[in-house]
Length: 115
Length: 114
Image (cartoon, rainbow over all chains, first blue to last red; front, top):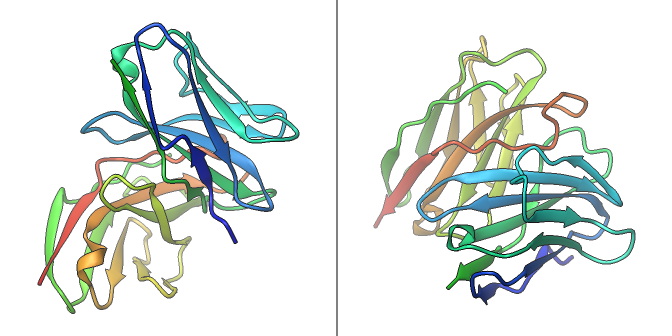
């Protein structure tokens, strides 16, 4: 039973480019969450999605960041016009539909470096 | 969500029990206590959760005080691979306004020594 998959594992972008981070949830999971961990800081919630719906995006920066979880395919976190401050580890987690508790299963993360 | 307080760091000898405390004095009746850990920049790993009864699984035990204002995560026989940052998180069950959002604090850095 494959776990949460994220790709790429490492991504290098120049300032002003776009970054696309992909997350495939565990089989049978239809809830996806994105978190960001800045260097030497804790994990911060960004967004919670279900298939084709954004449930909570209270942690997403207002500009340049967007997320989607289409009916088919992985969830995508998109960062437009990246800046050096976007350099961080981005983790995706998933949980089953109708989960009553917060057992979220995390992927290995994508390390984004902006040069 | 209720706020949690954990010691910044703890040490433990390999093979001994590691007892990690967490204070959550403002916890409300519909909030669970969750424990996750993060090993050296890997993705966080779910360990255990509980509401008011003590819980045990293959990884750890969770002891929650009767007033639910504090809890202790117990790793019964710590190994070097248990060295990690351990996070205690309090959050509401599904249907709560914060459902879906895990709020990570600074956690406890547990170092297991040979």
